[in-house]
Length: 287
Length: 292
Image (cartoon, rainbow over all chains, first blue to last red; front, side):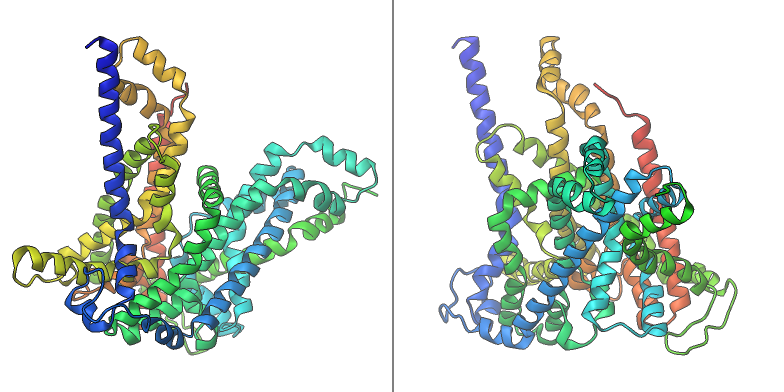
């Protein structure tokens, strides 16, 4: 064998090793999901006797789904999660892009620098520090907990600093000031300039913020669990937690509930996978 | 129109930033300050008056052995989780940027655990540890194996395992971005100068990816330190309260035992410890940054 052939063979062997490692890792990563999926179609006794069998001794069954859906009030909690996630994400985008616009374009105003500094600093505060006073102020003094609207505004308030930070970077580095000056000369007000010129140009950042915040809102548990205590307005994570607390022994139902809780976001991921991975990457690298 | 007057500035600011600033202050700044005030009261969560008690809550927090046990556990958990998350994430990032077939598919697959919230993840792993692993154990030994979640050490292992699984895919994406930012010509230049691929990795690629490491370690520390969702669903602090992490202890002190002042004081201590570790790590990491 010549040197080149040897190198080519070594390269091929390396490739094979890498692919094998990747496949093993991949199986490890999706194994828990597979286990849920194979057990969701079995009845309780079959899961207990052999959770690893592909099909239970009593055969294939779909009966876990309707019961789990009814007991966890699935369509209702799904609707709640959807309303909260969509409106909070939408508001976060509008509010933080506007806030960042006034901060970037008036960098010399003291209040802008002060607010921006506060926002950046606040990003290190963990939620645990804010949860007691939050309940104390909004539950004890104003008594406005237990409403979806309160939760939506709280979600927006918590994410506005991070989103403003990201829009700040985008406006600062990608939108030329000349463009806005041209719009002003042509007779636009500041307000019109923002909505007609700046906002449309922020699309990539809007996509990133949408993905990051929508995922965070959809999956959040601690804040909603403190705000929402009425059963009718539960979101999916709270409903799952409550469901598990009540029916943890009925393992077939638990499997169905877990699958139902994951399904919406997994289906979305199937279609938007490329955008989600790109959005999360750019968000993580900038944040 | 005068652009330099105070009222013009205020109007402009409120028009664009008013709502955002109001909400931000209402849910972050005001509660933060109010929370510091709460640590000096003995509020029980119900009554209107909040009697001032001076530093009694801090004294109680410092004397609360359970709290410091939970902090110690959190530190141990975080150290292991952060190390394994970053090793695995870096290895996966290396594999999915090495040009093998289907690397986008693998990237997307490794990211899946991040899509799902901590509560659901925890229950899934609880099922895997309690049922599937026990079934495998029974099949191998032929006898009856107990679940890992039944022992304190086992529960700790399960928490670390589940967290590594949860975050590795996310950190991988950051390392992937780091790998892509190191240009191939630099590696080639090193190889021509006589480096082996391993040496090129150690002396060229890794130093240039320093900012990725700093960021991933920062993110994983700050996330692991306040772990709550997975802790609640996977172990619920069991067995015998031996897997209660700091965040869960804070929650229990405040909301279960109704000692709001003490809970808030412990939350502040947790925040300060977390901030000190995070900032020190950033500072050390940034100090030695190099550029190509």
